[in-house]
Image (tube, rainbow, N blue to C red; front, side, top):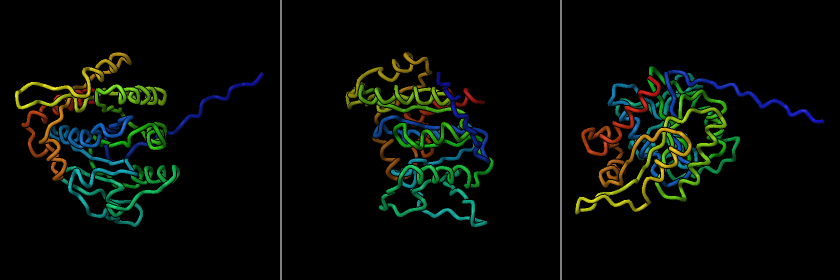
Length: 264
């Protein structure tokens, strides 16, 4: 009779310089996760929190474009990097370290090494919360954060489309199995308002909310398709920072308040 070995116990290392760490994840690409992550971070800043943003998508970093930030991080001792600062947020991304058009042709171990560098060798300072923009999927990066980095919770972003929701369910189960608390689900690109003032739900209706209920997770809210949100991303000025009174910024504020209440 064979004896099943006990499950491996991982030591979760905290990210120094911050009180809380929140992952913003999507199991499917193309659902607007990075735009949500950055605007959510500044919505939390509008609530009085000192924020950091870590772009953990090594293969497709978005933070340089979303914040119009293209400087190279400096190192005071040749070992640890000082995060860049924009709009009072401390920021780090692999996109700051390589040319914009250079593809990251890396295998898993190199990605894991890069993640450990950005979490353990960056001099984050005096932050209340770091928002981590995760790559899509449930691969090496997600497992590294779930198993080896001390995180306080994850937010899952999806569109209400059935195809995206299939992957969301896998993402929920991954976080549950690795012991990462899911703070809630966000329904992005939920609708758009036509010139007639009506809401059009082109990707389906209530799919994310129903999935949250199915897995007994909190539903954080709906976010629309809106041209102002896209324009602000293109020029590197997040809408929640540049126009906190915008109708979409107010939706982000409602979500940010729910998240803040969950860990403060």
